Length: 247
Image 1 (cartoon, one colour):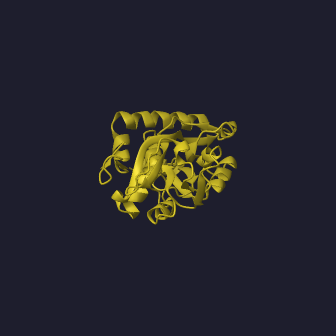
Image 2 (spheres, rainbow, N blue to C red):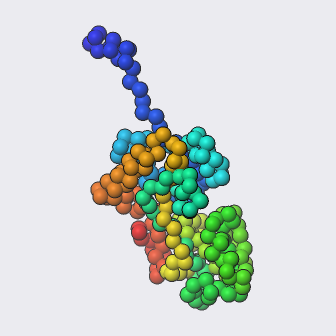
């Protein structure tokens, strides 16, 4: 025993460094307390290779600067763009953000694409890249808000005719802040973006960490862990406003 303790003192155990990511609060993907759908999937995937993941909440622009400056290891929820690919390596997609149209359930509003919203007042979250989708539709009156819940509140009060929002985020916000049968979630997907983790190419372990994440993601999908995590954030069935279902 004395020899064993002596060896421990001579060669102390070194804990594996924790992986640090950063992102703005984006319910339900990223919350302020190391939780959320993106956090849970990323943490579970990395855990399969013995990595521990922690999240530092910051405005998204600051999170990107932290990554580019080498002060954090990764961005846990990132859309691919050609410009970003100059600096970041992207993982396999672990989710898809689907943009849908939402209207009041008590109003007979038919939606068959953005062109069908001509003359309508449509709310969107300020600062999200999908605002560009409406640049070719000047006949749509766009009202922006800082938060999805405020867009939903404006719709509930009849101040806008509808809103465009991510399907999972909308289901979460409605389920937690409103009566589910107040709104109609239209089935047509306006646009869809794969969601990845991003690691700056200059990170010394960039390729290794991307490979570890991809393998871990494959493992948690294969053994059902991924599906269990997704089930914590159920969708609202467009056909039955009062029910939810995992995707």
